[in-house]
Image (cartoon, rainbow, N blue to C red):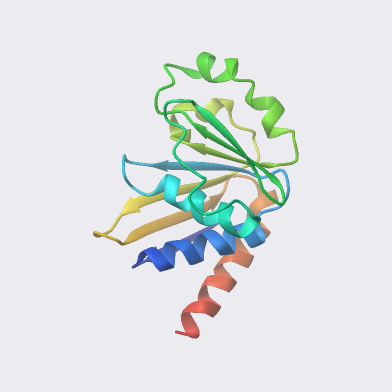
Length: 163
């Protein structure tokens, strides 16, 4: 399985998806987050960071600072490429050091810096489906992430069956 779609009808569903992702992401993972303004990219990062030990409310959009670092059970590096002019400006931030750090790297607006991302990464497209509803399409860009997709799909389905 190379792709999985999760329909989150509520904020609680988004939080659940984030917690499941935190559970299945391997150390050193890079996650490319794509979607329109207000789609929920930062909210998903918050939902992944909390189960990893980052205090609630600490994760905020790095739009104006470009990158934020959070100390959890694993280091979390949160990039925002919205204000980046081009890929050269993104490379000036030194993303390769973060990609190779063993921490989790989240890149919002990743479609703007696609060529700068590691060959192996997970891509999540976030789409607004209603006032609180979101559609998350999670894709393995490389075979390394296929097991992540399979685990995530199984856990998501298991939770839906228990509702």
